[in-house]
Image 1 (tube, helix red, strand yellow):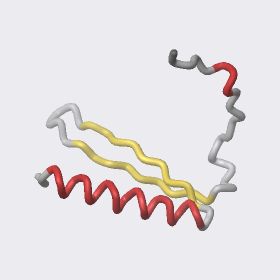
Image 2: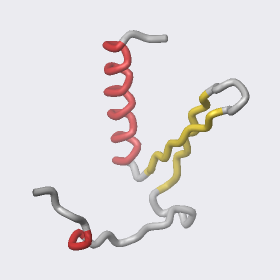
Image 3: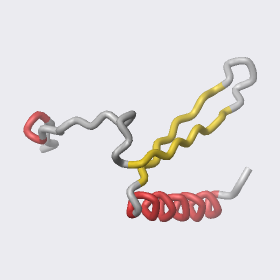
Length: 69
């Protein structure tokens, strides 16, 4: 267990590291798995080159998104 201030520091450091990876053409993907027997959480982090064919890219149409009024 970590304190809330430590958690914010860790999140900021992780964000900086992810941005550094993106600057050199690497994309970071994350997920988590929860073991149903004991509620143990496992983080899964995968890093791929931005031109890796495993990554499926789609064009996003901004006109289809509802805007909050």
